[in-house]
Length: 436
Image (cartoon, rainbow, N blue to C red; front, side, top):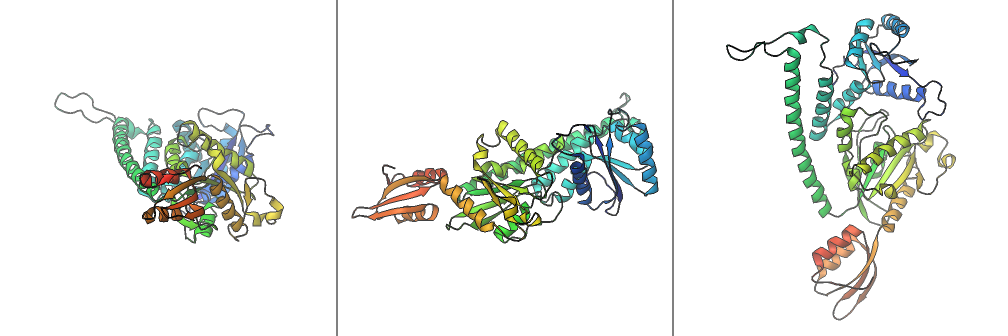
């Protein structure tokens, strides 16, 4: 496991330090945040026997928590035979060391927990490399003089070498060397994936990407629409690596459906690059399906978290600025709140239950309609001898009118902007573009 957690039978406590007890308008209630942290711990098999929200008047530099809170937690750890305490916050190396000494057990923070989950779930070569890189960068920040063996010195090179380097310096150097190698390997993987993406562009099927908060039901919806068997469980981060399958819409048009990693609030900074790399398929998507869990009490805040991540990607140029114009909000898990009628759809939304299949025909129709809305109408005169050009238009567009003449066929067709450009590049020399 990435963070070095004990075995899956480990008894754990999840503690949420909360600094905003008087803010009633806070976007994320403490209870919802604690529930999410418990879900993260349970998703890797930890047995959570204690969970609590501890209000902080101030963040203590030495232990983060107050002295009385540490003493109370120490008694709980001893009484419940707890072997790992998860602090749902960012701990400094010194705070982590002091808490471990005070509590007498393993202490990890939110970053280490999520790193452990990512390390367990990553399956592709890139995912594995990204997680290892994130873990090493996190580990490098933990290399402080907290254990005596890090202060021992190694001899220098040669006969007249100086005192050499301390063990901490050697460890930091080895980690740094490994990080450089990982970044080099990742760059090669990205280039390879870029070539695969270019190959997909030559097979001009539109891409529909699923995004949403973790555990919103994206993989269940993906399986329901494609008939695939992508791993889907009621747990956080059940899916990490993107998965793609082809589906057919009611109009007969084929699209590629892409399932992506689930979003989460306060993502560790070490994992932001790895996380966004898994979302690169969203940048290529013609339509983005934002899947929301309408049964979750914190659904509105989860929606905000997803939008903030995508807005950040728009600001750094990863996706286009007008990405919201390509979004269809999919309100999932309607079966848990009394059915679709109990939710009520608004313009731009589709209410469904991926687990029961209720509303899926409406979702496919909405995708079809959005595809049609984005299409352009073009007219061409195609020589009779150019059967390949006519076949291309029938395969990749919607022919709405055809008139056969002695010297050629005049065809009016709906095409996506990308397909129109491809057609005119490939057959522009043999066909005549008529007035739209």
